[in-house]
Amino acid sequence: MANLIVAGAAGRMGRLLTALIAQGRAHRLVGAVEARGVAAIGSDAGAVAGVGPLGVTISAD
Image 1 (spheres, rainbow, N blue to C red):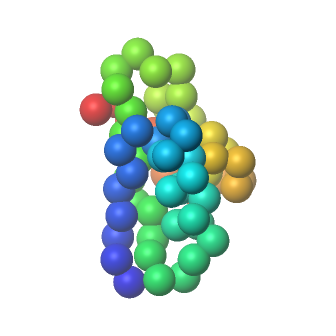
Image 2 (image 1 turned 30 degrees about the vertical axis):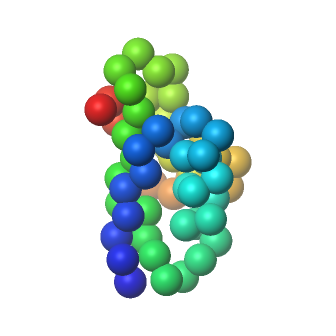
């Protein structure tokens, strides 16, 4: 199992990657970052991606 961090977690690609990681069993999301000032900072990455809470909070880069 690989521990993964998604950069740009609130963007289109970041949300897709978060959703794919959440669906699989081979990897685990352990971090999510966004640029300073993005409204999603402080939100759960899974909730932003539409897959439900994952317990990973999006932090500022």
